[in-house]
Image (tube, rainbow, N blue to C red; front, side, top):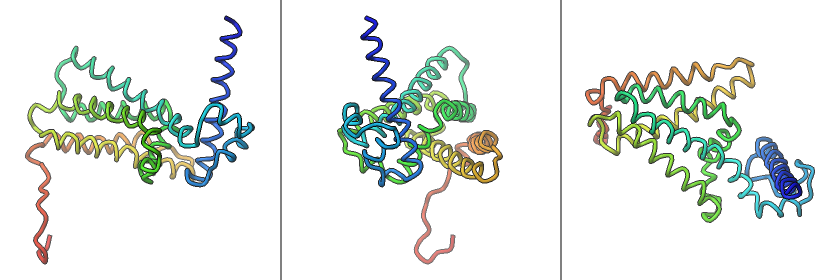
Length: 228
């Protein structure tokens, strides 16, 4: 029994070493440049040892993003279950709830968020073979569906299903964008304005929803030659 526990612990330790080395290489050189050899050097391991645990660098980076995606799923499920025991919340109130949920997720695993951010913004997901990104894609779909259900419960007929999906996309994109901007500024100034800037952005969206559907965007495009 003790030997089995030690073996499991050794395996977990080795995987953690590989993942930490891969993160350092990725954040220094980007996803395209690093090779398994570079990750092995950074982790202080042989290339053969890396392949004992991961068949490719794509599998390594997928393993780094899965924990934060699963944690988001868990938090969404918990939030949804608590909704059933609370008073009804409006879309505006739920938007601010998503601020707290996403910011807590960032604090849980900032590197995981940075990796997802980079892969989404650089379209790197499409370059990972489908059989490898399958688990991550499945978790992302489940998270999106859970988030849609949450917003639908506060919708009260104000938005159609397409608009709810668009609202989620706007919230997620704003979250990732603000994280990227404020982290960049922090590296230069040493001042952390991330929580207050995120809260301000979510508040703008939440306040605009108070006037929905009267404030529904008009998406009709101007006729060619017509001034906007």
